[in-house]
Length: 251
Length: 83
Image (cartoon, rainbow over all chains, first blue to last red; front, side, top):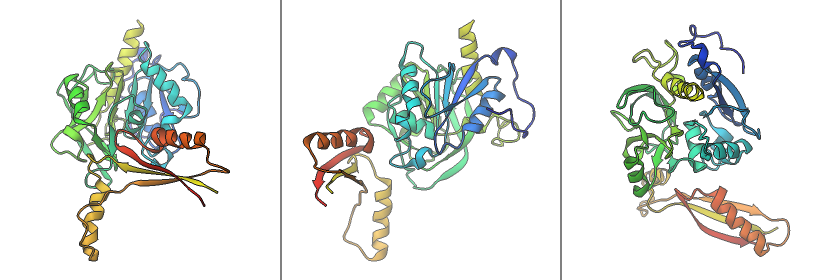
């Protein structure tokens, strides 16, 4: 991937020891946020590796981000066609393996993870039927996952939310299990923007290596270009969490 | 050429936001007899030649794996329609 584009200031957190951690960012036809996700990885201090949906290997990356957008135009169902891309088979195997590859799905990436059955439930259209774009407050309900360890439990963060099919649904049995196992990772605070069951904004798998959420942490990583609250960099913790875990685990 | 028609509907227990919007629009056009609308999807799979049992089984499998998401949808009908 290319160097940092010439907008914004210098990288927020350059820690040379993190540069060895490689995070793959997957691009499907119709993906929009791959460049921002790769930039977020670099601003957090890691090395971003471009992955293409038709690839048949994971290029030895230490973690994978499946970014947002409209892969395959959201045709059929959001994420339904991407789920069967060759690279997704590799990602599903690696996420379920003993190595527990860390995987983060953002927005359309979250939809792809539910279609892949890496995460339970599904997304349907927002209850008000409108495309929504706003800064959204979330509460970090679980800071024990590989992607949330740099946050405090119960910390409230503000990141952009932008989607039309953002209403998280699952049956009550699944929702009860998610709550009981601490797998509700993020909840909407102040207002439920789309009718999601139990205000759920993001969840994890049982092992905590796979996390999906509808809001966009990769758009809140750089002072002056994110939400106005705090420094606008509340999303950076996703990427520093996984980088620190990768580097720490390698020592 | 024969086609296999697959009908997919949102599960009954899932509120269908699109259907809800449609039922709200109907009375504004004077259609006042309908108390609920649910919107589904119809797929038409064209087959070059005869629809064998094996091809029909493939269509059923495709309906369950790709054409529908069993978390939110049911395959309510798979049938062969001659052109």
